[in-house]
Length: 258
Image (cartoon, rainbow, N blue to C red; front, top):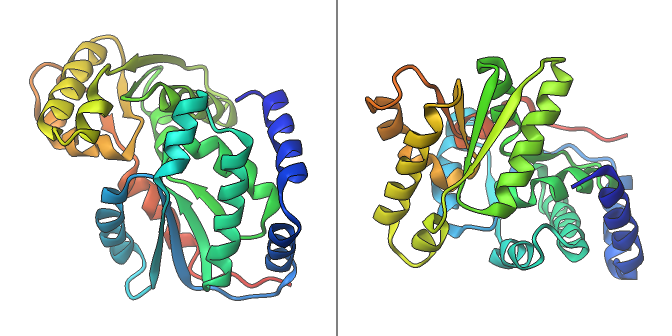
């Protein structure tokens, strides 16, 4: 999503947000609060349990609330990227999260990661992308970064996330994208074995061309151990977003607004 596209989406959100939604968001922004709970926004229901477990390691005892909305991803796929109404809904979820006592909203879907970034302009609640730490680590890991995805709508945002991380670190990096055709459809149809096989095939092909491989979606983390132990690409690091993404929550144990 280019800067111009982001401005257009932001304007559309401001025009399209209903008076009641706007009041809710403004109230959340203006109300001084201290929050210790965690909220997560998922588009894949199966991610809730493993990410909650990781959150328990980072923030023992913290209450974790989950918002699950598969339509955010479905609409993003249908439009080839997050349309304005997806951003409006992410903003609304941030307001709901704050109303429920959360101090942070972690967006766990990379396909709507850029919408999560734009949502920060509309809420005081910290809105985190699960894949940002992974992008930063990828830049530190080598000059040629491979991005492996099962969705075209994730491949672009993750590639741009790595490019922005390289700019922040003032490092020149080449990003090599690779789409695992058919893997996402296999997972959604209940065939995780085929999904894993297609992702591993993609990894083996891509790893011969790069210094580090990034798995663009949290749902791909299931193949990390096998890929890391493989003999086809010795020494090529494989990065996934769940653990490093959840680790961000360690620095958001409380927030006080004034």
